[in-house]
Length: 147
Length: 75
Image (cartoon, rainbow over all chains, first blue to last red; front, side, top):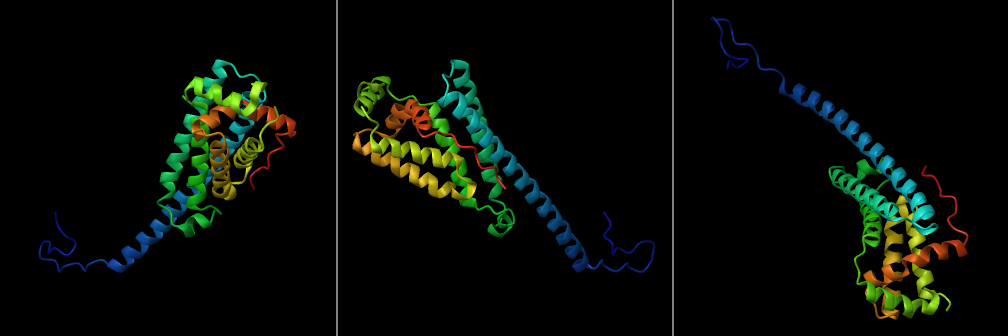
C-alpha cells in the first residue's frame, strides 16, 4: 500500500494531510454520535419507565385487588423477568455516560440502579419459594385467625 | 386480629416505592427495606418469609386506604 507522501512516477511528494483537521472533524462526529446515543438511551429509559408504571397498574388491579389465576401469575412473572432484564441492560448502558451527560435528562446513575432494584424486588416477591409451612405459621402469628 | 402497625408500615413503604418518581427511588427503596427489617425482627422471621406471609394482605390494605390513587404521570 502506498502512503500519501510516497513518490509516484517521479512526481514530487504530496504533503501530509493536516492531522489536526482530521482529529477535529472526528471529534465533531464523535460528539454527534454520543449525543444521538444518549438521546436514544433517554428515550429507551422513558419507555421502560412507562412500561413499569403500566405494569404496576395491572399488578394492582389483577394481582392484588382481584383474584389472580395461575396464568395471571405466570404472565406477571414473565413480564417482571422482561422488565428486569431491560432495566439491567439500561443500567449497563448508562455506565458509558458521564453524570453530566445523564444530567441532561434529569437522571442519575443511582436512581436507575434503585429503580432496577425495585423491579427485581417485585420479581423475587412473586417468584418466592419460601417454605409454605413456615410462611403459614408466620401468617398465623401476624394476623391470627384472619388468614 | 388487627393488622400490626409494623405490617401496615411495610405496606405503606411498598406502595410509596412502587409509585414514587424515579428521582425518589433510592430513598423509598431504603425506607421499604428498613420497614421490612423492623417487621421481620418483630416477628423473628426472615425478610423473605415475611414478604411472602404479608403479600396477600397488600390488596386488602390498599382497599382500606382507598388506593390505588391515580398515578402521577412522568413529566
